[in-house]
Image (cartoon, rainbow, N blue to C red; front, side, top):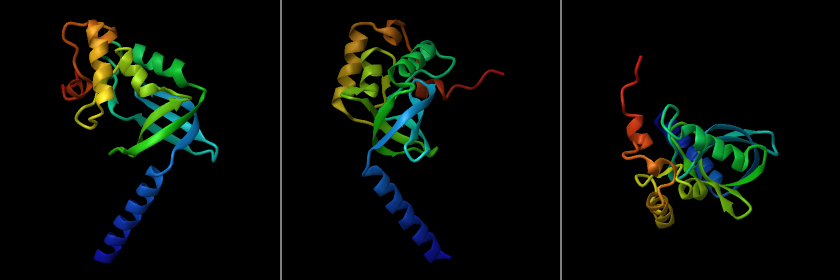
Length: 159
C-alpha cells in the first residue's frame, strides 16, 4: 500500500510538471467572475483557469460586477494563450491569460479591478501596477477602505 502511495505521488508530480511545462490555448467559453474563466481547448477539453497573482472582488463586494464585465469584454469568446503557473487546491489551473501581447492579469491591476495577491506572488510589476492604480484612485481604489477579497472571504456569511 505504501508503494502505491509513492507511485501515485510520483505520477501526480510527473503529470503536473508536464502540464506546467506547456502553455494552453483555448477559447474562453465562460467567465465565472473577474479572476476565473473556463476555456475550451482544441481537444474539446474544458479547463477552469484562475488568474495567477491577482484577486478580484468577490461576488457581493463593490466592483465585483465591473471586474467580471472587464474580464468578459477582454476575453469572452476569444482564443487565448494561458501561461500555466500551477494548480490551486480546487484543481484549477493558475495562469496568466494573454491575447497577443495584452495580459489580462496586468490589465485588471492597471484598471484598479484587482489586488496583487502578494501572499502567493512576488512579481514587482504586479505591485507597481497596483500602486499606480491606487495613486490614480481607479475603481476599487476610490473607496476609503476597500476590503481585500481574501479578508472578505474570511467574514462569516449572513443568513
